[in-house]
Image (cartoon, rainbow over all chains, first blue to last red; front, side, top):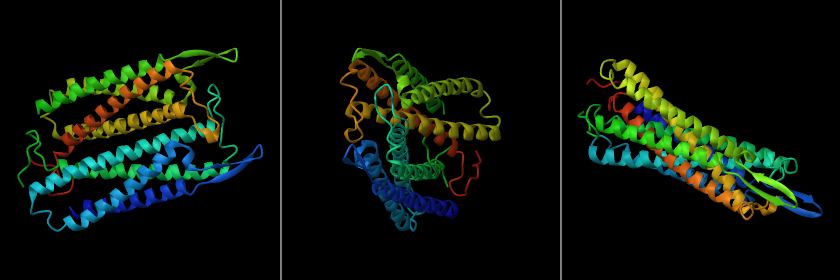
Length: 180
Length: 180
């Protein structure tokens, strides 16, 4: 029991760090280029997907910090209140699943925007951007990689919370708690 | 036990139907417009994200069909071979999780491409498309909605497979199977 709780804490700390790094890399990424005598500045604000990524990843980092605080408080009376423990586990499980899916989705949407910036879409006359904003694109690539690492950590965390919740149930009767 | 298995079958059948509907709606969506005397045809092939969505959703539909077939075969000797059952449950759980995340990610990437088609990106001189290819965009919107329904069904299926797997484990000792 201690083993898996420790792994959970390490995973959550790593996830928080990866999310914060992603947000910093995306948020601080700017490049100005002069095109036809007009200075154009590329930032994450230009693309909806990157803005959403910043919000979602910040929220996910905050959520994991809250879960870490909760872990410190609830570790003491885990054994005492079975019903309350199950209830908290369900809420934690659903929130973890939600966070995992949402961060994964936000990252994938940002990746799609990044791919469009690299390849363009000829038929629609959307031009390539990364041949002009090269440094911007490299930093964004690093940020998205980091975001994917964080999403995979969130998926692992949601596996563990599913395991912690569902192993309390009977293997034979539907949604019946096991006797300990 | 029968209750949850039946729910699982219904969910998988609904997921297969939603995935097939999504693939058909995306795949058959074309619109030709004459712009500056040149006929331009919008299809899903123009955008990487939509092409990937078609492949991923087709694969997910096929995977769910296979799981339905497997369910028919393995229902008979579920009780007999405990070890083999756990092993198959683990594989099923991991594949379901993988399918749920991948379909969710593919859909979100396609949604991002669709949002870009509606809003454009002024700073990058990517123009709006949906004021020209209106019917194409409406059909694509329906397809993406349908794809999200399918992704949520996949998430529910992966919840059930997590429940079916982890309830076989002891609530007190780490990764120890319960005695029945």
